[in-house]
Amino acid sequence: MLYKLLMEKCRILEEYSKLVAVMREPMLTEKETQTALNQAVDYCIENDILKGFLLKNRAEVLGMLLEEFDAEKYERTLRSEGREEGREEGEEKVNRLGILLTEAGRENDFLRSLSDRKFQKRLFVEFGLEDEK
Image 1 (tube, rainbow, N blue to C red):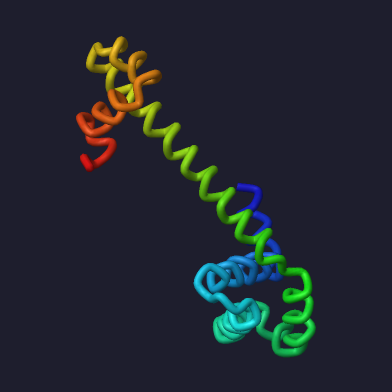
Image 2 (image 1 turned 90 degrees about the vertical axis):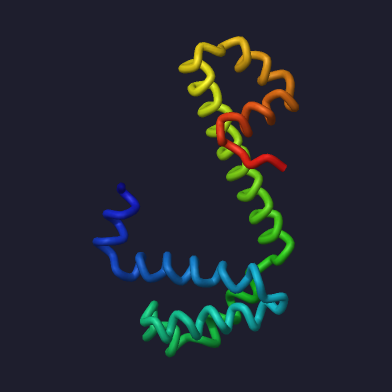
């Protein structure tokens, strides 16, 4: 909520936030860092995101980004974020299973599922929390 309020009150901060988000996207698909950053800057200019600043300071911005960018660290960060999202999704799924089993009067099945992964997997499928594979 505070983040949204800040973005509404400060256009430059909002545009900078968009710039960062735009910079991340091509880094996921483009192998060449310089090409990816150039694409991101082009997109920002075309979409009026810090357009004036980027037109005036494009070379300096790209130089700074290329100098500061560490591809290995970026990849580690992406993997870490992916693991965190996966953990959160897994926790939500287990919590949902617990609620469904409790509502069905099957608390013992829930307790068993916490230590028996194959049983847990069958319950996820049974309750539609996961597709059968």
